[in-house]
Image (tube, rainbow, N blue to C red; front, top):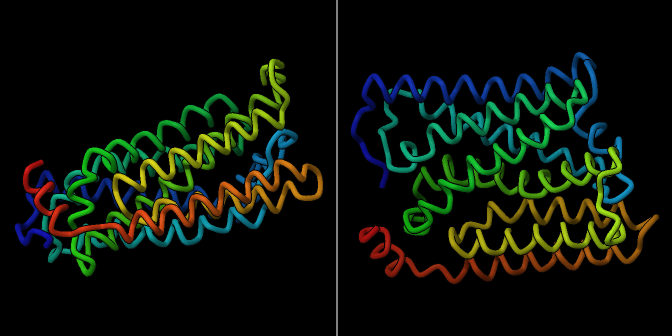
Length: 269
C-alpha cells in the first residue's frame, strides 16, 4: 500500500517540479501544434522516412500519454498523497523525462536533428533505469494500488512509446543526412531496429510484468505495418509480426505474475 507519511518540504518541492515538468511537456506539445510553429512531431518523423515510416495516426497516442502524465503529476501535489516508494523513486527521473520530451518538441520544430536524438534517448533512459531498478517493487504492487495506476502506468506508457520513437528518430536523422551505413540495405536496417525494439519491449515487460509498457510499443509497430504496406510489403509484415509478438508476449508475461513470490522479492530488495 502507499505510504501515508506526509511529504516533507523538500519532497513537496520535488513534486511541484514534477508538476511543472508535466505541464511544460503538455504545453510544448499542444502549443506547438496550436500555433503552427515549426514542424510537428509527425512532420519531423515524416521528413526523412524513406527507411522506416510510422502512420501519422499512431502519434495520437500522445493524447493518452499526456492525460496519464497529468494525472500522475497532479496527484502528487494533493495534500493527502503520501510519500510512497514509487513516488519517491520516480520523482526526479520522471521530471527529467518530461522536461526532455517537451524540449524535444522544440528541437523538432526547429529541425535540430542531433538535439532530438540526444533528448529522446535521454528521456527514455531516465525512465527505463527506475523501471528496471524497481522491478521487484513494481511487480509486488497490489492490483488496486493507486501507485500502480497513477505512477507506474503513465510512466511505463511514456517509456514504451519512447522505446519505439527513439530508434525511429535515429533512423530518420541518419537517413536524412545520408549517414545510414551502406553495409546493409535500408530495409535490413529497419528490420534490425524493429527487432531490437521488440526484444527490449519483451525484456522490460518480463522484468516489470506490466503490460502498460508494451502496449505503446505494439501500437507503434502496428503503425509501421500500416505505413509500410503500400511501399515495402516485407518490412510491413515484419513490423506486424513484431507487434503481435510484443502484444501476445506482454500479456503472457504479465499474467505470469505470482504475487507471493514477488512480494518476498520486494521485501528482500
